[in-house]
Length: 448
Image (tube, rainbow, N blue to C red):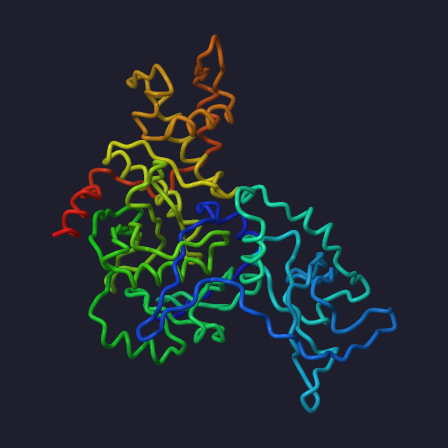
């Protein structure tokens, strides 16, 4: 079939509001690969002495890492960027030509997913100024990850600052990647990787993938199919996959996911997680749309650790479906749940939309006898703290005489429901055939 290409745009920063940008990403290995190293800073080779020239405007070329300069975006407009890395693009008898360097830049008004390589042709070189490190550190104060060790965050930024894989092909879709992913060293020089959409094995060349596809007899993810339903003319299915039983698939899924997720912490042990993979189903098989993962045993009551809708399937309501499905599992378990913290800004928007739709749908239903926050929590399995923060955000909650009072006029509820938007692809609880994970049974089998 035809390959559908999916590029990147500034709009994608807002369009992907269905994915909290955090995950447990484990280094995986394709068939025959040795175990990859942990994601730690690699000793950087000293850059060979670089011959510099000074332009008529007093600008040194090649520009130093950290330089701030105006750079042309795809729409022709100039935006401020910071030079993150540089590399020679041409040389004369092995000596790099100062004017022919390429620069990996970060557009300061855009998300990191839009970082890219440019040349001085796209830059307004006259605007170049050396970066003020102290000023930049103050500007880059990261509220979202304030709880993490600053040194570890700096190491993370250093290792992940340049995207290593630029494109992936998955089934009929070719997608531009957004972020660095810690693939094994033998894959880091590849600009494009080819994934089998059924097994998630990845290859350097399309010929290798084609040979693999001729041998494979599996046209769906491993694990158990626990949900299937047809809606809007498309059939969606969920598979539950145990990270311990299908380690290679789950590790490769994390590899793939990290290309589209920016976060500051990585987990290296998929054994402790269950993965819920959402697929579109047609006559050719099951095609991965996205997934979420959750800890098998979460002391904090988290019902979701990582969530991702692949770029090829965004804006189709699948991100909302993933969030909704995580709560349907919580209802089946009879446990109140909440997503793992910290949530990104986009993640908070997505969850607040779900919480708003669920809570207000109950409040407007006259058949529901809701008397308290606790009643709402028992009906939705949403944590009370999330209910309080959502209702406060909507100005529907008052605190009187030491207790919370819900103040919700019908017209106000309708307005908030309209603002929250559609529920995306709706989950039908009747189609869920699932038994919650039993840690005691797993331990008994382990001992046996």
